[in-house]
Length: 71
Image (cartoon, rainbow, N blue to C red; front, side, top):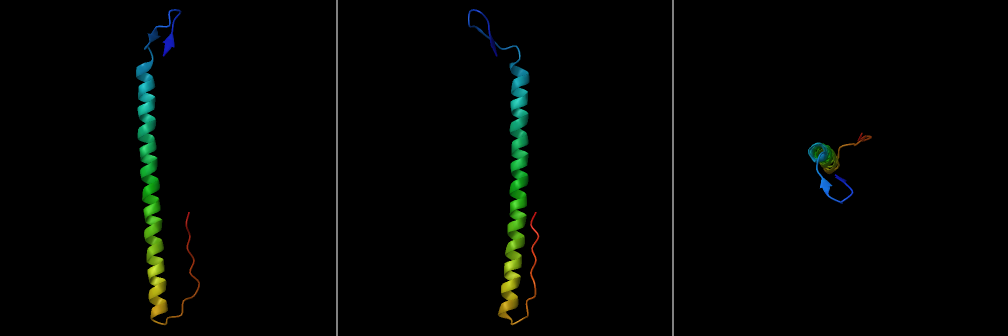
């Protein structure tokens, strides 16, 4: 948006500006969805590991080193 000497607004470039804003909103939503998916996967894997560990302890099994790789 630009103003001229009489302070009137010109909307010559508003459409490209709106397109850029819309694109960034969609892009942010996609990134957010990806982060939620990764967090959910890590949480599920962590829960499985803990349940497996508790099961092994409850049944008197020897538990060696547990290594978790989280990126």
